[in-house]
Length: 103
Image 1: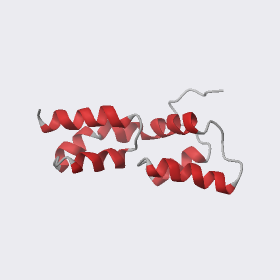
Image 2: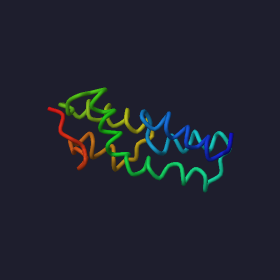
Image 3: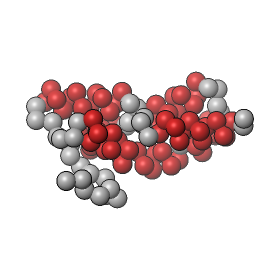
Image 4: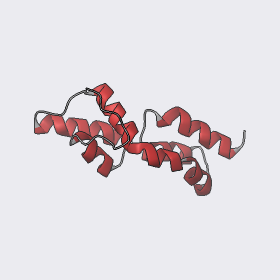
């Protein structure tokens, strides 16, 4: 299997549950070069806010009511490899622009 195919497969399989940083880490642990990793993660970077929001909604469903709960939600998303900026926006209640509201 070619390195490009391995990278695409990892991005597809793991991207629905993990942030871009974590997927990149897994790709590098498989020995993939930077150019291959960069090419395979372009779409993941573009969809990170939507993926983070979907995972957050599935796990928590509602905004945090206490600072402790907010930190718990932030740690959860950060441990999945989502960027700090995306984590703050999602936990802060910001819905990505191209995502339909789920009321």
